[in-house]
Length: 101
Image 1 (tube, rainbow, N blue to C red):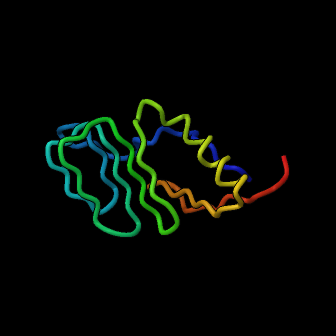
Image 2 (cartoon, helix red, strand yellow):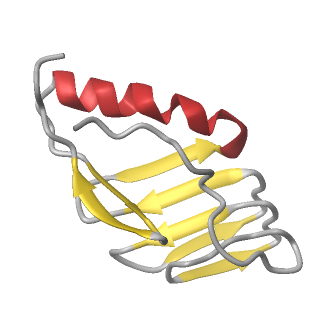
């Protein structure tokens, strides 16, 4: 099964500057950014409107206004036969199955 962004990335409670941080992060002068880390501490300085997802297999950094384009990254990984995990705070990690369309 191929993963494609369905629910918004901004899942969770927002802080005073509209950041959503379900992972381990330190944010300085950061706004409207979602950080989810399963690996290590993520630190940001002076950024806004980003999606940062750090999993054991991959790191994604994207403009949150272009989150629907993440599916093209998943498709490129499938074409290269790379494992790609998707893990969001409200859902368990799911590995993309590389199957012929």
